[in-house]
Amino acid sequence: MSLLAAIDHLMQDNAPAVTDPRSTRLVSAWLLLCCAMIFAMVILGGVTRLTGSGLSMVQWDPLFGVVPPIGEQAWEEVFSSYRSSPEYRKINIGMDLEGFKSIYWFEYSHRVLGRSIGTVFLLPFLYFLYRRMLERRMALRLGAAFVLGGLQGLLGWYMVKSGLVDHPHVSQYRLTAHLTLALLIYAWLLWLLFDLRFPRPAKNDRTTRILRPLSRMLLGLVTITIVSGGFVAGLKAGLAYNTFPKMGGQWLPPAGWMLQPGWRNLFENIATVQFDHRLLASLTFLSIAAFWLYAQVRSPGAAVRYPAHLLMLAVLIQVILGISTLLLHVPVGLAATHQAGALVLLSAVLLLNHRLRKVKSPT
Image 1: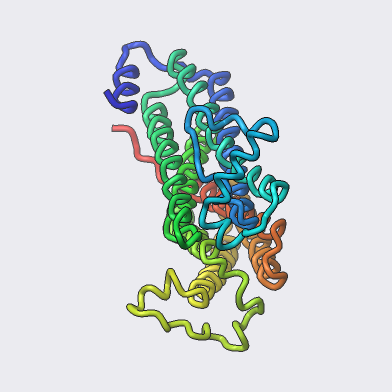
Image 2: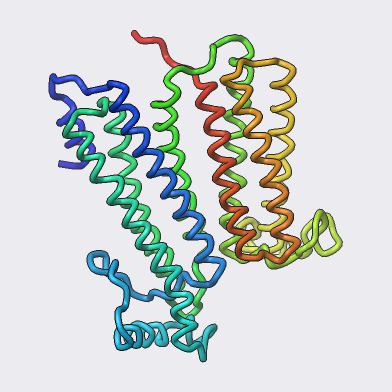
């Protein structure tokens, strides 16, 4: 029996789920913790990428891999495995043990945090199920999130394997898929948290009905822009054309259509990938600014007005962070902050959509 089927069977019991305020607070606090850990996981993954640490662990034991090397001999064994990898032979040749430790700890922390998220999610989830503190619909959605989390772990190792070859470079396709699934899990849990904290949507008046499809468009645009950033990170495209708004003195990317077939330029050409991210980011900023101005004219209620203000502030800060990261040649701290800003922006646009959501009348 699958996990979701087991949850469904359990929730078929005639005893109703407990939905008192205390249970809601406990589940909300747990979901908030899970979202915060996933937020940290994405940022740590970005730092791991930026510091070139992602291929430092050439092996991973899913059961006992949580224990780091202890003692000089254990470190020498792990370092010996790394010295046989293509990355050491072709990129980090001559690196000493201390240098290896500096990259090893980033990747190790990233993997251990991922396993910790699974534990922090699963154990309280089982407890809430046992105490019948979750409604059936919420329980099934949370079960689906756990399944996605398991797939994310497999996808992470699949991504790393793409770099443990003669060409020690992680596939930008796999990296972006790994990032996208992380965003999906984060957004999924955050939406469920909003369901608990904001059970009533904004008043369904004419203004809300006009703004609702616009907010969905913004959600799609923000998501596509963040995903395009995954290709920028995967190709290290931010290290090229460190000028703004022009690229190498031109408005259009130099050599932006040199690969054949043409579609490859969108995902494999450094110049085109960076240009696409710039273009999408600019379009996102202008679209959110237009939405915000329109919302001021329409004067929606506070349930929509405050999320709109938050979204406008988030995109303004994110644009400043993005341009600064590019002009300063992608310093690790600033680039990690830019990635954090992307998650804040996604959270803000999700909140706006949640407040504008249309709730079906009970039949």
